[in-house]
Length: 432
Ligand code: HGY
Ligand code: MN
Ligand code: MN
Image 1 (tube, rainbow, N blue to C red):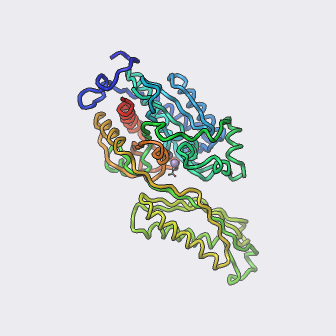
Image 2: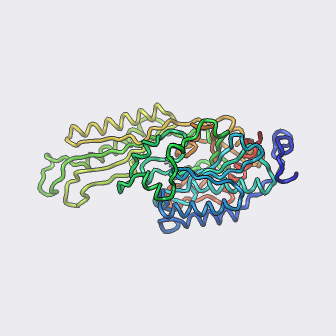
């Protein structure tokens, strides 16, 4: 096997499509890189906070680009900061097989959400290169910008824009809590291209595979190494503003109040009831932000801002929840509290591609790992890449299923197993 020359299917895949090259994952190096990335944070360890276009986000991007420098991959950044590292392969003109995830992290969260999919894809590519594998199709690593909704309220901004699920005019209207506009902030961060150039055509990619921690308990509970994702839940986010009437907590009689906080608590109660009321365990709804104004112990709350995050693996059930929640919000008007609801996103669920699922399953068996099918309850960039090309996800176990918390943890051996399967999956999909 001559490293670097272009062999096609028969020489690299033995009988039954088995990849004959051995794949060595450099687990200590990958652990060090994940550790280093975790240190680029605006929260004290073990927590990680890394918000879009913050100094720590830019430092993390620079660190990743430093790692990529030694791989010979061709680098490109788009106007939002989506970063692409391409291994050309034997037939550079063919649509690439892509893999990647995100490195932004919600406040006070963990070090493995997203980063496993970025550094894991890099390690998979380095391992294939070291094994002398030559991809027929290009293989492309993608670092997606802003998978988390933290700064501008919208999740998956980078992959959403690549898929055309958010337009440049809509992007230009996004503002953060300080009223700073996404277009202005991205340019100051050094991403100056045209937003119109972010969108990619269908067929630009041959397939997409994302490696991610499960962010749930099933794989660990069942002792299974690899989760093969079959569907990704459909998320909706609402931003709700409530305006009642403020006043002195000691002098305004209860019968004369229009208390925005009490209205918000009734709505939060209705959010929980809407999710519990569908009868399905796949219905999830959360009030994650609840801001009160003027937030004084002896003043009646006059204004509330709250967010509703509602998800389900079935679109109709998700929308039934949202209808019930919006009815509860509207009911507050009868109590003299003005309400304003903005739908930030209402995305369809994704059914992962059968061929990509088959490639992941075969790669896992080839590598000697048990698999089980899983739902993706959290959303991921694969939710939008699936609008561009056949997509799938590989999950690995994380301790107690915990995520978006500083104690989020994945064993180095579990991560290496996921990377081994990802490498073999990419090899299969990239062999023309
Ligand atoms: O919210 C999610 O599911 C993802 O972590 N952005
Ligand atoms: Mn997350
Ligand atoms: Mn994630």
